[in-house]
Image (tube, rainbow, N blue to C red; front, side, top):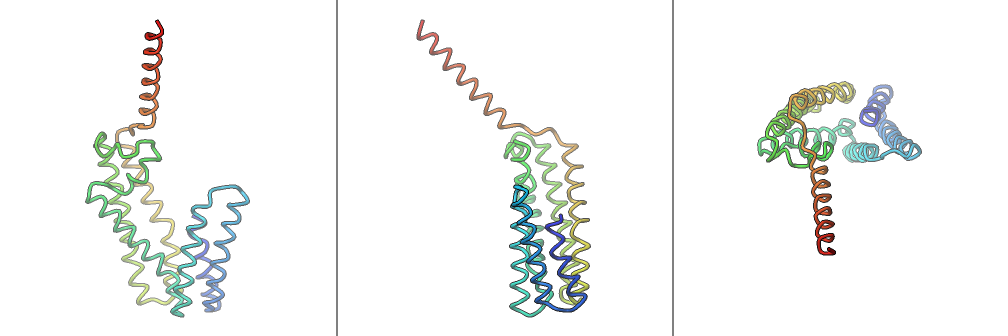
Length: 209
């Protein structure tokens, strides 16, 4: 959450004070790089930090190319729109995105698609929830992009960073808490491998006799 919120917060704060696009953009990019360094020093995963750097870098490039400070936020807004559509479309197609994301986390992979219909239903509901929340966020931000000034857009965007995310996470938890338990396909594979090894040992013992 820090890596998601802090660069944008720093950008809009500096821009609100002095209206300096270059200083605001450089500060946002610099703090993103600092967060990567902190991750490296702590020997923690840098995936989210690097994704934050790339997101900020795209925003900086857009803003510098157009000279419009609001374009700093445009790549992130387009990403949110695309992600919201992806959640809805994959749910409609029967392969909800949240299931594709969480399946490996719960060691079930794609077993929920054919072997656990109750869990597939929960993933579908969660994907629709994520899609609806992200698209509602876009419905607020894109009109502001066209009609509001940079500081208004920036502060609204910062305010909408964490609450929608927490709401989506909470709804996902509610749906999955009521769903059947995941099928641990990794445990099944290990059990099958052990059974096969046991059969081979038994066959070898019989042949030795």
